[in-house]
Length: 96
Image (cartoon, rainbow, N blue to C red; front, side, top):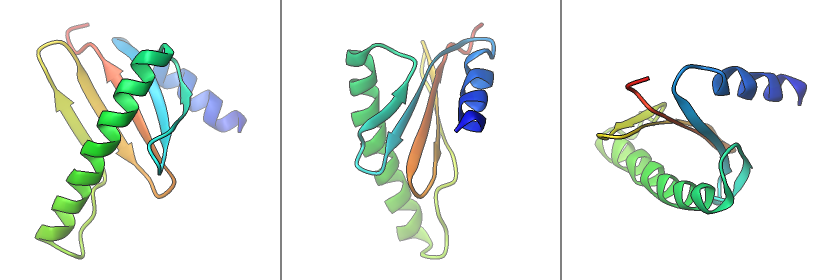
């Protein structure tokens, strides 16, 4: 568990990182550096998006899988690293 904490701290200390959320397979946040309301909003929406993206990739090629999802908007960049048991979501300001 200390290794996970160290990794999260290292990511959080990167320039421009606004927050980190770890979500389980049901879309429930299990760790976050953001406030509760923001965490719930990002967790629910990004979980749905990643499930849809994974399904789309598999529909195109059944042997393939989603390994990373990156979304950039005018204000933020959201990076999602899916795993079997969780999603790692990092929100950052790309202009910093």
